[in-house]
Length: 185
Image (cartoon, rainbow, N blue to C red; front, top):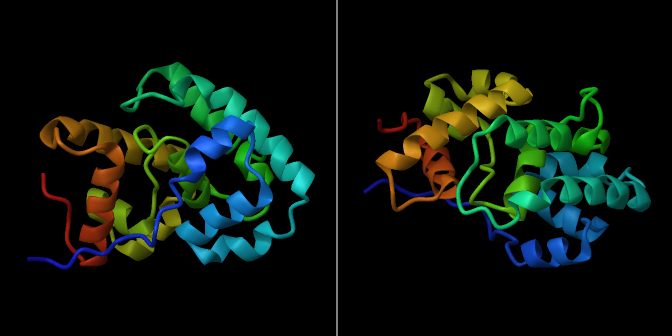
């Protein structure tokens, strides 16, 4: 049996708190970023707390209709909303308007809000799904179009793995990538 590598303890208890308060507070954002990767945490500390709350309030308002979704939508309305909350219409707003957040870390924020809808992109899972080296995956995963392709690939695999959620498939791909394996088709 292959060794399974797991994310550290997921701060899933934040989900209901964040939706109830209508924004992500500073401590919660830092917990999510530390859970995903400590790399973005240092630069995230340079954000003004009021700015974090302002940006994330807009994010939660924009995504409210996906709060209770049980599977990932695939319509253009969903992708327009996801694009706007990640990178904004100008490519520099949305969660990208905050220091320390780019596609991998911002996808972790979305996954906390609803893990049944948004997977967390990382170089290991991307490498396993697209059969590229982790180094090449690191170069690609910072772009919205790659996140969308990653999401589509996982969504297309859901019927083959009916007992798994998109988040569980994402974790499966990450573990395969960390072991240097491809994703079983």
